Image (cartoon, rainbow, N blue to C red):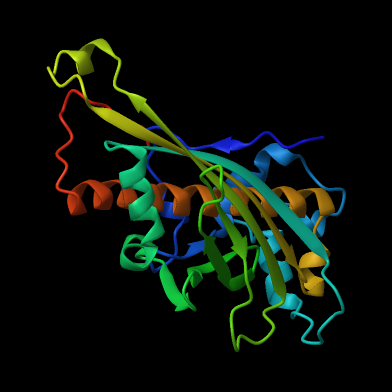
Amino acid sequence: MQQEPMRSPDDQEIDQEILGENDSDFLLSSAQEAAMLSAYGNDDDASVNLVDPEDDSPEPIETLRQNIQPDIKPSSGYSNSFHNHYVGYMDLLADQVTVMKYLDAHQGWFRRCAHPFKADPIGETGYAMGVGKVGAMGFQVDARVGLNLLPPDENFVYRITTIPIPNQPPQGYEVDFQAEMRLKEQPLESLKELQLGQQNLVITSVEWDLHLTVSLQFPNFIQRISADILQKTGDSVLGFVVQRVSKSLTAKVQDDFHKTHTIKVPKQVKLKR
């Protein structure tokens, strides 16, 4: 069954309680895990059930963390894979040629707009992007991915693909990042926009389509958890990370574009992002 793509939310605030000590961390507490997984049903094995966070009794997952140490021996291959399909949008108040010149010169804005996430250059078109610590159920990784921002093809389609991060030792996970970004120039046509008296205004709509797969080798104490709960937890955490990073980057790129081009967006114009 094909996964329904997650679409960028409109005016949706990020749940700050899910974040770690740093702005770029994504670590779930036991109570948040229980709340998120409550809809997934119970497992027959009582040792892996998540209980009501309001219950004063020790949580089984905490007992599992304390009594079982992660297997320090490396395993061949990966034990689990998680996938997310995300579709995002952004409007820029300029013609397509101006937008393409800006996107092509990403060396001047990508690292600035990526903050608080780290983006270290790799060659001329690549970046090692770190989104901080990501984890749940007592397991976490310091998530980084190498991204290659390719120039547009003959159809003006931009692509971002995964590249290796130089000199990075094995991390116990593998990321496959495949994104396409398409541009469409169009005039402002709504009634409020026409009332501005600026008939020549155009916007360039940007739509990107991301398929992201993360493969992990979990330690034994995580693999004891129900496979269904583990899969849904991983997919949910991955989806949240993708949504938050995308929403943050989109807002900053949109603001940076208009600021660097000294474009003042009229209050009557509602740009999508």
